[in-house]
Length: 448
Ligand code: B12
Ligand code: SF4
Image 1 (cartoon, rainbow, N blue to C red):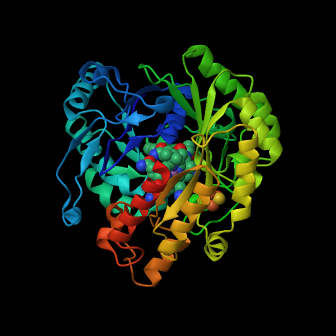
Image 2 (tube, protein in one colour):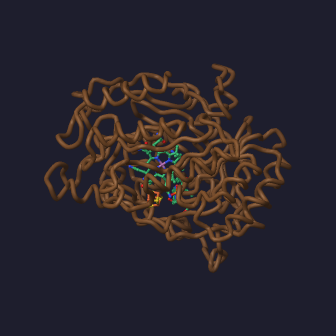
């Protein structure tokens, strides 16, 4: 069969290509290919798309990250009160239309798969599907991914109008259900360990790529109050030989790749992390960890192995300076853990630019003082910071608490739960002024 697999645009007020690659869709596309199907992959967020670069040459910043092409679009009514521009990020509409026209005339598409990641990005999925329906009015469209797994009710209600079948859940099940719906056999997937066996090839990209994204483990053994990961995945890690094979396979095909990014939730939690890090040092690439790693696990030996393997981006999950907040939200870190991890990393020569800490901003139980103290603490440790604005994710403890306390409605439209819009629309947490003051404080402090 001919499958069209589409990574939709993002509609938001801010978005940046911080090594964004649609891993979930890539896995599903690889499995379809393995089953003998033909896959046409359309990533509307590919900054190096061959048609886009003819129109506008993208500028890449550090290690292949960079700005998406974007255009201001009309705001949906629910965001009218928010004084922020609303934009469509990704390949311009005209180019996408040309692509769909070409796909339609060259192939008989039998089914379309679309994946939405963040819950508040569903609107981009909707707009993409509206367009797909113009070209493929009667082709079955299937929606899956993090949004429909976290918020199935909303996804069902929103997308069924477009004749879209919505699937939730992680692993191979959603794809099996898609295949069954199409009347195809799933026997080949019985006892198939997709996480171990599928090599991400990046063959679906005919454009240049300066980085690739992989996962060596997925899920996490902690249970933080603001995080949905433990509800979605049981912690599992891919074996070291499989990870190394996957890297060799990619580098053989794309020797220009210089940056490998791990999207793991909890990169350091696997038991054989020491062995993995030793093996990773064999490849002449730079590695990056954009998700917060566990400070408690950054022992002197781990720090030394991270350095030897050539890790260039280390983000530590810190979130709050207040011991009570740390304890109540999941106890993944204390101030002493962070200080120890930083000392170990610094001893190996990691710089202030290479090490940063994620600090949560606007968590309901957090005070302005807590955020300021967290910034000061990181400044004193001489590391960089990333202020992460809190977003209540359906299903998490924080979300359920806000619903129980009456701050948000149970079936809230996820668009307004976007961390950029929250302070304009809800009464909990810090005010817009306080958030601005904190950001200015951090900026001024870090200018020196
Ligand atoms: C990597 C990652 C990042 C990266 C890149 C994110 C990206 N946009 O690609 C970085 C570090 C930049 C990041 C940032 C943020 N992230 Co993040 N991130 C993740 C993480 C750890 C992994 C995502 C991933 O690639 N998973 C691996 C793939 C294989 O899984 P998958 O996509 O679910 O796909 C599977 C299935 O869903 C299914 N599937 C997927 N698509 C389809 C389609 C069809 C048709 C079918 C049938 C099946 C199917 O098949 C796959 C295999 O099973 C997730 C947690 C998680 N474990 O998912 C959080 C997560 C997505 N992030 C989250 C958050 C909150 C954020 C931030 C907002 C944090 C902040 N406060 O600033 C920012 C937002 C930044 C941004 N604008 O992107 C939340 C989502 C919240 C939400 N409302 O939706 C998550 C769930 C973690 C959490 N805290 O609970 N993140
Ligand atoms: S440690 Fe990180 S990934 Fe694990 S539950 Fe907490 S926030 Fe989520």
